[in-house]
Length: 131
Picture 1: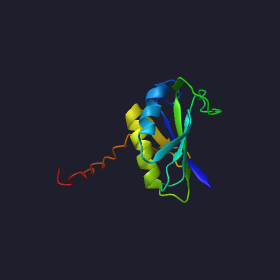
Picture 2 (picture 1 turned 135 degrees about the horizontal axis):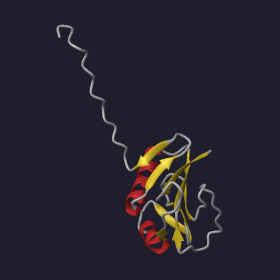
Picture 3 (picture 1 turned 135 degrees about the vertical axis):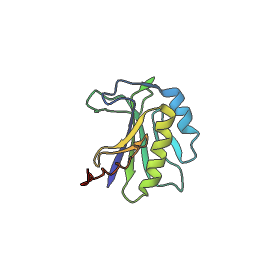
Picture 4 (picture 1 turned 180 degrees about the vertical axis):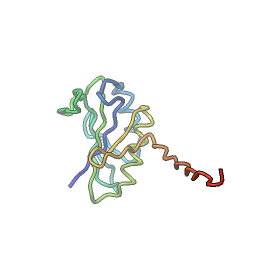
């Protein structure tokens, strides 16, 4: 079974990134190896992953044939349930930070990058009965 981490610049997929610069960044990552102009997979010894660079419509649908695209608006990580989710999250965070985009896991509605600040609510003091 697999699950997905999606990296995008805007909820409606309206922000694009230059593919050549992104490919150069990804090709330098020791965890990945390039399999087509817009696809990567895990390097030997790494958890299974398939990474796809694509152009989505506003609803998030895309098709890819592996051909080079000058600009992309989504990076999709197809992850294995047998791999460590922290490894996939860390990989997605590095890519999202490079692009200044966000990364999320849609099924669990979990944002991976940027980190969500979880502020503890200040306890509300009970009214003083003496006043």
